[in-house]
Length: 330
Ligand SMILES: *Cc1c(COP(=O)(O)O)cnc(C)c1O
Image (tube, rainbow, N blue to C red; front, side, top):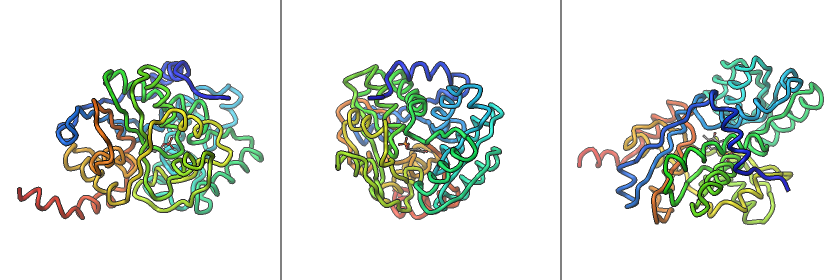
């Protein structure tokens, strides 16, 4: 069976070294105090294009043959993968077509258009968008680069895990966002490849957690896609999932699910305490700590995976925080 291993991730790192930022990892005084262990934040929301997705997209594009590059690439995306792919394709002077559902926020769509990619909006779910991708592959010969279930994408996301374990070699636990599982698979393969004793836990929103439902069922299952603050975590894992289901099953130590209120509290904490603007998906690992859903038994690395949130939506979330009034008074 195919899987992605440490060696693939190290090769990906060489391939994309001059195309991505090596993002910083900083200690969070407030979370360290709250959990009573050192809590380190991996500031990947500061990556070029605003999310870690540039790692996988850059590695996948760099791995194409000259003939494939000439044909162009196509993908379905809730936003950040599309944006990363558009950026990476533009650097190579390649054609990129991005297919997405109507649930995608306008700010993400505008950004992809600005990067020069062609956009197709179809249906109400990632699965509808995926059908359009398959049509373009069949009829126009474009190369499909899916957002998570692809070895070069997983290896690219895994480079984040290499950086985490180098920046915090004594990490007992790594918290990572979980949707389709490209990120969690790559990070877990890297972290456990270097440091087998380190635990890796995935964090999702409770509304439409497809990987969690699939892991519980023992096989990929369909879950209805619902609007959530963590919009970048929306979408299924694919009933024909090839890599990320088995990698998450074999490598993740646990999965944590969060309510919408808990995710909002994570966004507020990131802003008020850490002075960071993160999107809903980007805040879920912090949110899991704030919600008291993680048991601490050593140094932790907590991923901030993206910052591509509509700033009006962000402002509303910050301003509806009733408890901040009492915090200010105190
Ligand atoms: C895509 C994405 C995730 C989830 O990654 P998967 O590989 O689909 O699990 C998490 N956070 C952000 C900001 C994303 O864009």
